[in-house]
Image 1 (cartoon, rainbow, N blue to C red):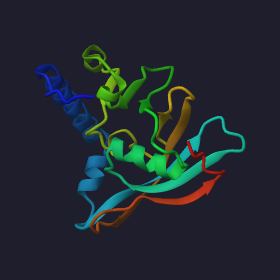
Image 2 (image 1 turned 90 degrees about the vertical axis):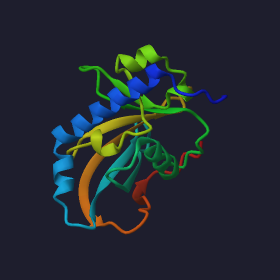
Image 3 (image 1 turned 90 degrees about the horizontal axis):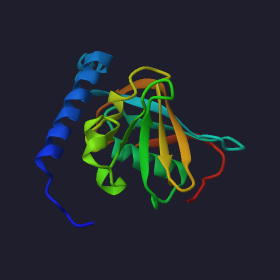
Length: 182
């Protein structure tokens, strides 16, 4: 896909989305908690990633920085689940009883500005996971390979505090089931 500079409408949309996520983070309490951490400490999220409707159950438990951006979380899920990053993806927040918001790369997914401005689809580039998962047991969905529809449930199981030392490597700590390898 050839590069095109962002339009003024795209830039406005991104700014609105960024302000929204900053407000959510302030309301959530995560920003306050993180601000009160001792110097040199950071929050680390323990996520359980479950491939929905799998028999036997296939799941992974990972540790990630709380401020990991969604495109990087996509990479963590790919590695943890044994996927090969060969298909499109998006994150889904909400359920049937409330409006579902989708987070992903609008260029790859061919999303129009109307959907972005209505808030149904949000560019995931600058969205950290701690803006969406705030409290223990909060969850979001991650769909990979729209043809086969592999849907994963990502649940915030625990929040740890760890020393902030250089680059953090996400860790797959526990798992069941065989890697899916697609």
